[in-house]
Amino acid sequence: MTGSIIMLESVTISRQQVKDNEDRFSALKQRGIQLAQEISGDLWSDYNAHDPGVTILEQLCYAVTELAFHADADVADLLLNDDGRLDYLAQSLHRPEDVFPCHATTLTDLRKALLDEVTEIDNIWLSIVDDRVAEGDSRLQAEGLYYAEVKRNQDDTLTDDELSDKILAAYHRQRNIAEDLARITFLKTRPCILNARIEVDNSQLAEELLAEVYFLCGEYISGNIPLTPYFKAQAQGFSLEQLFEGPLTEHGLFDLQHQTNDSGDVLVAALFTIINDMVGVEHIKTLSLSVEGETIYEALPRRNNSGILGLDLSESLKLMTVKLIRHGGEIPVSIETVHKRYKELCYRRDSQRQIKQDFSALYSLPKGDVKAVGQYTSIQEHFPVLYGINRYGASGESPERLAQTRQLKSYLLLFDQVMANFSASCAQLNKLYSTDNTQCRSYGYQLVDESTVADVALIYPQEPAIAISNILAKYDHYYERKGRVLDYLLAIYGQKFTQNTLRYFNYYYQDDELDKVLVKNKIAFLESIISFDRDRAAGFNRSQLSWNSANVAGLQRRLSILLGFRHVECRLMMSTAYYPVGAMH
Image (tube, rainbow, N blue to C red; front, side, top):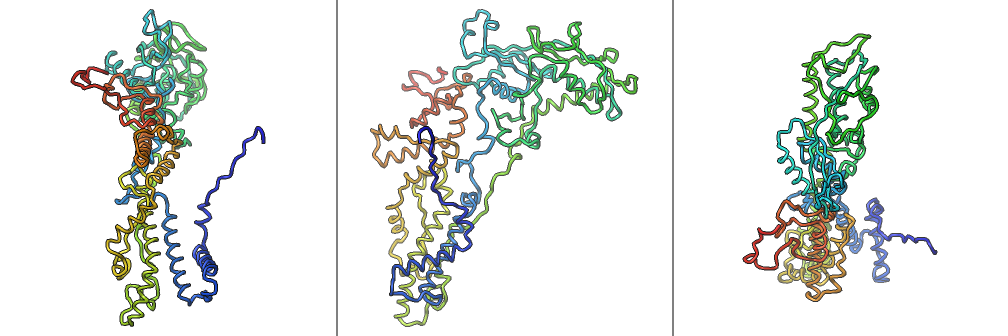
């Protein structure tokens, strides 16, 4: 059809149907008998339970059912290493705090990252350099440069130069390609006074309520960004994807995207809402702000050339301009108690900026249960003793009977070896589905020895392990199969790495060598998948050396891996004896 897209149905095997098939053994037995009838014709006419052929078929169906049970185990069970632990890094399984966050890209992202890392600042505003800031400096006219306006923490003891260096260092760790921070300005505080008459009830102490009024109104007026712990946000219904949206902030969530405190103007109506929502407030009689002797009833800019507004908490009871009213009379308060409570609120706010969040408390990782998926018990041990092939043997029988017994053991050993190899393959899935490239075989095998089948040494040839390994090697196209497994692991993160260009323009490797290189490149891609995707627009850290180090731009790292370069870092093509490495940044 023209103009329409035809969606082809994906051809898959439903795992649920196989898992819920309660008649798996019966179905296998019925299918086996059906095949025997088609192949043997009139040579085998008795398919009842007493027939030895049916007994053998039942044992094989039982063993296959058991192997299917192992293969149907939980993924975490199959990926456990020899120590019974799940090595998430080796399996390329990354934690939510690594997968979901992005590199700081927008100005909002940069502000979050800087607020999280530099705890000495209460807020920072980033803007693109314009003529107002450039002031004739030709360097500041370049596109991609930002300037920052910073509100310091009142308890900060760093000098302006020390704090500037700390902000610049944090910015350089977050900067993107073709961007830079040109100027940092520290805003001075423009004191303002809150004037209010508030009617309250008896539900809260007057000093506590008054301290809360000054604290919350002060946070809004100065534009401080409240910090929400991750566990509280999760309790409010945030998913892990929502919690880790944007750059990773280790101390909590800064909601700059929807934060009304960060708007350009201070609205008296917003102060009215803040106070009215407090517990114990019944009615607000009057409300205004005073700045430089002028009384404001509607709105005023939060920031201007003179600095940023800050609420002045009066040191004297006589100058306290917020009055609490109860039953028509003013409530007497202790200014010392108000100050003490106010400082407690400020300490609680500031201490949150110092506490790094425990991300592991937000989710539980699969642990897996240890299951002996690689352990195989021979089907011969489950045959009736009459057959003489189990560990009890056929002692005392005639030579002809012993020969028949050994013949049956040899026949069944073919099935035993295949099923033992299947168990070994299940046991090595944790290495196959990982970045481990040391094993160089995708099919597992284990030798059926005397501990599994009695008298097996009389049947096997010399050095059977080598013979089995050589047989499997003919069918084990390791690098092709390992490449497909790595493609699957990359697809988990929405990535693919076909390397078709490397195949087309291959002038250096033989076919078998090229397959090894392609797998090695995919492993390098997978091991760098987090930074590869997250930091693709990140620039290198200008405050650190970049030669012969991992300090490279995200785009350079991405292109180097895609092109199969062994060296990602910037390095000299000449001897350092002629050009000292430390001389270049």
